[in-house]
Length: 313
Image (tube, rainbow, N blue to C red):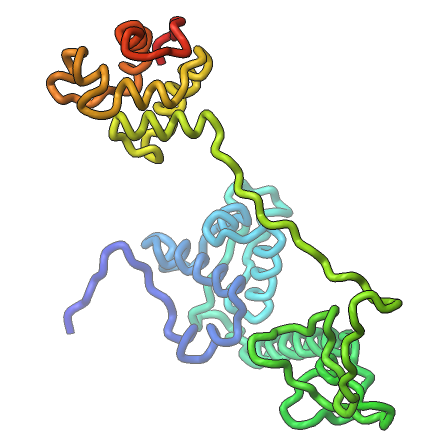
């Protein structure tokens, strides 16, 4: 049978899986065991002796665990004879760490599966006890009276008169919680007519003021007018149009003037400005640049409210 060689791999003993060792180890212990196999069986010079010096810091880097967790896991692996500590590098201050030997059946002490099983059972029992204590610490519901069919909580039970029994009153369609101003009355209680307005102990009917519509501000009116005459979307060009509108209002121009001078074929823009004569709509900046000139040209046709200057938007 030809030998099959897979490059960049290392072997692992079959007993780790076939004998159930992996099932009895926790995650931290199995990580450390695989790291030891990589250091020993992954190098040809260590395969014969099945030994290598492995430091705690090296295992921490390979497994991602903390130093105390690695030390605890290696102690357990040594106790069940999966690995054997041949030389303690910590006591002798060896720079390469402790000398570990991987047990692949060559040691006198075989893998102690019985001890591994006992440790696993001990962990499971400790977990069960911890969960039981947590359940016992929860507050118990003292009301042990059985609930009617379909009711899952005592909070939804309402008293029925003075009989001491409980009854569930379903809410009308569309109502999810009882209204504190109009509570649901227990079954059996007769309906009483509501007191007339003005009786003692009752509040007069509330008269709500009609909602007043807010009038648009001058800034918003000017922005709408500029967007209309420039044929620009106000949402997409809010900043650009708003800057021009603010400058026009600061110079005391009105939205009516902008509408009259720049909207329609008969306006000043389309009659006198060469860009308007080419049927080009004005830009917001061009309104600020030409509105003073437009007002001077229209003084003969009608009164104007402003003849001042405005800075370019």
